[in-house]
Length: 321
Image 1 (cartoon, rainbow, N blue to C red):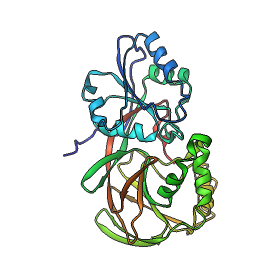
Image 2 (cartoon, rainbow, N blue to C red):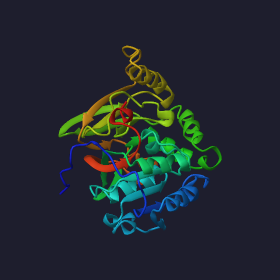
Image 3 (spheres, rainbow, N blue to C red):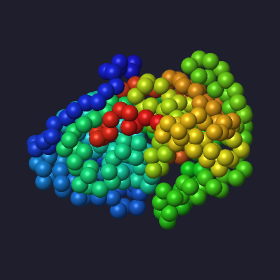
Image 4 (cartoon, helix red, strand yellow):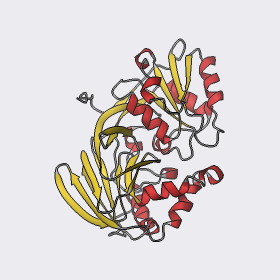
């Protein structure tokens, strides 16, 4: 049974790292290998922290790296969004503050938390010790469960990620944009949803189940997404291609800046839910937090309220759209 979490909140920490045990779990294959992780670890040691480094190995379960997490004061997850969310899920409700060190390609979780990208800036976040207790998602496919912090989706967004894989090494985060532009005529199907027990169908190109709500450059995917309200925002993608969602992005930015009512509608619909089951007439690939998986629809997503403490200088309102 999932533990009952405390109310999502901001939590202060110690400003001194001297003598504190810090566990750094890193993915050596994330991004282009040019993150400042070595410099960051040296800064931790210079500050007197007792640092333990663990490198992820293929086919080793994430739980094997964090079985002793309760003996550490802080956890650093260095890699892409998939690495960070897997670590967060493996340590859910363990109450150890975690730094989402941006060492991947897009690092959307770190962007949503408004984290710096340089070693000195991230060290300051650690020293200030401020954290937010936030929700995450749990996805179940064929009896197997995994976790996600950003979003899970089936349809056009998963296809976009699949197409971007071979481009990421050359173009970095732009690979996602290039892949989205290629989705001129994405596959449409009828999606069958169960949202908190209620049946729903629609025809479209995809479903996204969002916990965090900002894409690259902290642009809002849509308005009113909060990672601390105990609910997902379910986005029904009805438009004919991904390019047609640009007007909705404009609406989201306008809402964020309080510039008035939406100018565009009809391309998508948003709903709130704590538990969502997604199936489709035509099977679709599944992605969560930027990682493409061989599993296809159907799948179920469940919210885990207050499951993770993320280190950040941001306040609660700063991580909402």
